[in-house]
Amino acid sequence: MTYETILYQVHERAALITLNRPDVLNALSAPLIGELAQAVDHAERDDALGAIVLTGNEKAFAAGADIGQMKDQSFTDTYMGNFLHDEAERIERCRKPVIAAVAGYALGGGCELAMMCDFIVAARSARFGQPEIKLGTIPGLGGTQRLTRAVGKAKAMEMCLTGRMMDADEAERSGLVARVVANDQLLDTALTAANQIAGYSRVAVYLAKESVSRAFETTLLEGLRFEKRLFHATFATADQKEGMEAFMDKREPRFENR
Ligand code: CAA
Image (cartoon, rainbow, N blue to C red; front, side, top):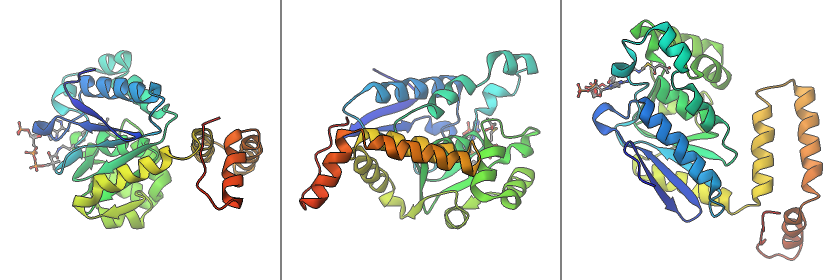
């Protein structure tokens, strides 16, 4: 499959999707988001792959939705066209873990795209922000919701109302990113984590992702019940037997994803 706005590669058992519109800091155009959704579908269907890494380049993960493409749209255009949302929802629905590897700017829709992923690994150069207020609009791909859940009301309000950017260290301190690494270690770190995940029981990985994700959608009591059921369900899998037997036998497990 060939793409024009992204690159798609496979590294062992992980797909690497690279946003590739460097002239406009990887601004999220409709074609780019469309190709990204197709690439996620492709990786999801490939049984050899267990996780996905999404990245940009050294200067930008993505500097937001494409302002040139958006600026003349009417309310009806954006509403009826569901601007960028159908494709974004495809990424949110992905069952395989998706890691965002962020260097440089992750602004507006770029920050929101990173937050759609399951976790973010950031290079020291990373800058996160929701600057839509400066353009006379507001975040539209989850910024007011996911950023608030990640960093709390005070910082989310400040960022959405002033457009201030957060650097990588502040983002890590605030809970937005999982780890900060040297710029030249970014891809290695993200791909190593993706391949580590891909080496575990895929059933357990999907269940763990589903259960953590549920924490954002339900009460603590319901979430705990949900987790308990999924935990019990793992005991119906061959991989749970293999994982625990291998531990007792002091050997590496051989998971078969069943
Ligand atoms: N859309 C379209 N083009 C963009 C862009 C965007 N979001 N961000 C950058 N570009 C383009 C610039 O127009 C410029 O193009 P030219 O070379 O043709 O002039 C090129 O990328 C390089 O950008 P700069 O010259 O501006 O680079 P810089 O280093 O001086 O500044 C920056 C970098 C601070 C990120 C600045 O580019 C910037 O502020 N970009 C816009 C960020 C933004 O407002 N994002 C939110 C978009 S709205 C949104 O995302 C809505 C939503 O929630 C869905």
